[in-house]
Each structure stands twice: as structure tokens, then as C-alpha cells.
Image 1 (cartoon, rainbow, N blue to C red):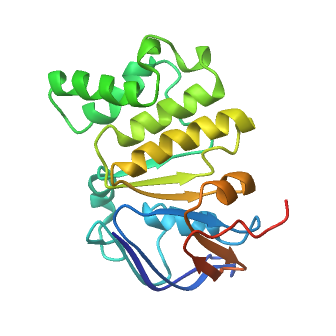
Image 2: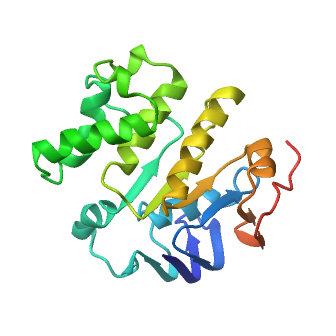
Image 3: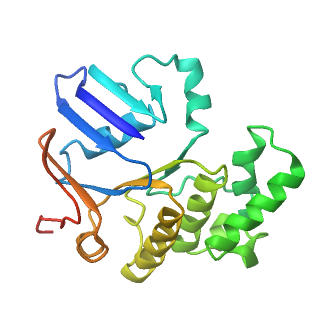
Length: 228
């Protein structure tokens, strides 16, 4: 599903953010990406959805070699990915329903299919009763659940989550994790960058730990491994 081979990323200022990564992530896996701030986690995550390009090496996601894909083809590639951000990135003037539907409208799905699927995913994330509300009428946790609904509405094989609980209180963070767990049970691959030690240590999954641009640990059912 995701494969990196000898991937490195050096920024123009000379900073080596990623150094010789070799990673394989299978369909249906749930992977935490952990490490100190500035370790290279964000670059690692961004390369998976082609926000950043590697300096050397190859990255394959959903069978597509991201090292060779043209910039004009990136939006098409991203249609098969779901991306969840720490700051939600919802459109403030659109309702809950419209925010989620927008992801289907841009790929010109039929209105009947859009309505059915949007209500289906809003039911999954527990927000079917708030379809007409605007983002600023929702709590932070509810906004993140809308973001998750938007990320999965086109049935992606992979969801990439960059600190999805970073701005949320502990109780709400667990609600978000329960939602992601449910999505993963439906054979969706999830790669999640996080600083949340409690979640990593209690909801056991594969852990990839990054320090100073290198993978220092990759273990099944691993622990967070850092003091906060």
C-alpha cells in the first residue's frame, strides 16, 4: 500500500529532514509515527500525500510512484487518499453537510450518490444530527469528526492523519480515536503522526519512531517511548 525505498529529503537550507527511509505499510495496517518535534515526522507524512517530494529515493502509494508523478496529476492521486489535519481545515461558510459533500462534488459524483454517502459517513462519525450547522457552531472534537468524515467520504484506501488529536482535550481525543479505529476495522490503512503518549500506549498498533531524520524503531504493538 505504501512503500518508501532509500528515501531522503534535504531542504534548500541544508537541513536533512529524512535520511534513507525504507518503509513498507500494508493494506489495513494502523501505524503511529512518533518522535520529538523537529525529528522529521511531518516531512515523512507530507511525502505520502505529495505535499513534499523526496530529494532521492522512491515512494509508492496505491501503486503510484510519487517520485515520477507530474504536478498536474497530484490532485487526481489525492482523490484516493484521506488527509486529516490538526487544525481541521473546514470551509467556514459551508455547513457540516456541505463541507463533506464538497469532496465528492469536486470529482463530479452524482447528487443522489453524494447525498447517500455523505449521510452514511456523518452517521459513522456521529454527526448526522448536525448536518445544517456551520463549523463555528461545533466543538473542536465535532469539527475534527467532520474533517474525518470528509477524508473518508470517497472511500480512500489510505487515511493520513497529522496530529488529529493535537488541539483536543483528552476525552475528545479518545472519541476521535474510536472513530479512526472503526474506520481501520473496515480495512482502511491509517498512518497517524502523534505526540499523544496515552493513546499510543493504550491502543496498540505498529509504531515507527523517528529521531534526527532517521527511523530508530519500527515495531508491532509498540509503545510511545518518549517522556512528554
